[in-house]
Image (tube, rainbow, N blue to C red):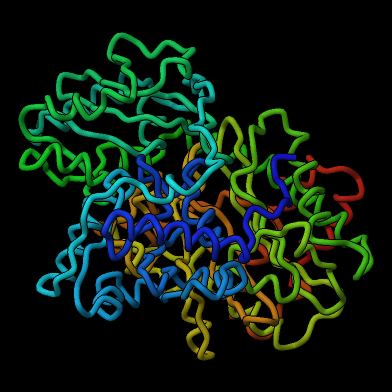
Length: 593
């Protein structure tokens, strides 16, 4: 199994670890210390060595941080994790709703007499520290660089990952590394920048057409890179990882030499202050040009080979999901557990030789567990799928030709009318987003309300974004594209995103429906403005949506037509690939409404 159901952190482990950390605070003369989720590369995902937040607090979410003071320890989490954090941390930790409550505001309340709060300058982005210092101006609270105090008190901290790197074939990448380096170097020259510092692992993987396995479920390797305007790249990565040829344009160095190389840079240096470690900003100082990671937008706008690879990967992935749903429907309520569903789905995915890994821990939350947005089933939480439950099944695969991410919410036995009404509102929003056309230039924040509107009309909403970017055999969460209230990056053709509205009632049930979609040019409609360029979506995911949870009369004619057409496409594309039993199941699951 790629996925483990072992318990990775327990609330009772937190208090003694917190006490040990506070001893280090006192020893170093600090009034506080910040523990982020991030590592030195500033990506969303981290290796076991860098799971400091989880080790200290027990909170396993993919975003958040902890601020430890002598008498209080705040665990800052966003809306996705408000339910989860309550179950994972001991009472010595105080959950803080973030970003509604900023770090600066919380520190001002809890350090009214001022003080020194330490942070590891490798683990915090320069932009984060700058914003926090602005918020604290005039309050006598200083953020000071410090050795990592968690590392001091973590006796069995894992070693850094040293997994081998492999080449990503051109047939899947769609563009050679040399071509990428040349065109990004030209952009640097045109902007008057002499180099760019790149720390995000998926950016380096994309630029050099390589993949790794330093982080679970993400085909990336740890390293740093400097892209020069003369079309040369300095890669700072452990030599023992590199068993592939990177070409004449790439020079390889040991990671320990990275800061010295940055210090030697001359001219204007392009960076993304949102992902640049503070210690690197300290070295660059006035050479910094905050113009973003040069790989981020080109990586987000997939080329035709990446798009078609992703589309084909989704068709194969749909077979695994549908075969699993067929099996599940043949089981009696109360006879199957969450871990059995996860195991069966992974077994079906493993039948595809192109599968390299799953793309994240499968979320299989039944009944109340479904209300935990990023629920991870363990041996201790494993629950039976009971009559009347609805199951949130969110999963994906990492294939050589693409990354998948799909959520389906499934009826177990006879489900109540309230759950069906909520499900139908979520479906309406998902369909409305799928049908949307919009003018070129709009960002995710401009259109994401379309998927929420049916819930808003009922006085309901959900505390996560409508969608995130997805890589091409890279990270399942990819920026800068998002369908989010805070996303200002214009959507462009080739961007792959998720479309996943949801609804969650704590202690009762959860609902989420997710397809992956890719931005494309929309054809001009009869009577439309010929000169007004428009965009729309191409759907990549083809798996039935549970008709048993739909209240047909709540759908508009257009929504019903979309759903029936979608199910016809599912049947046409996937039925020939299925076994006999699954074909029969699919015929019923895709019948018109």
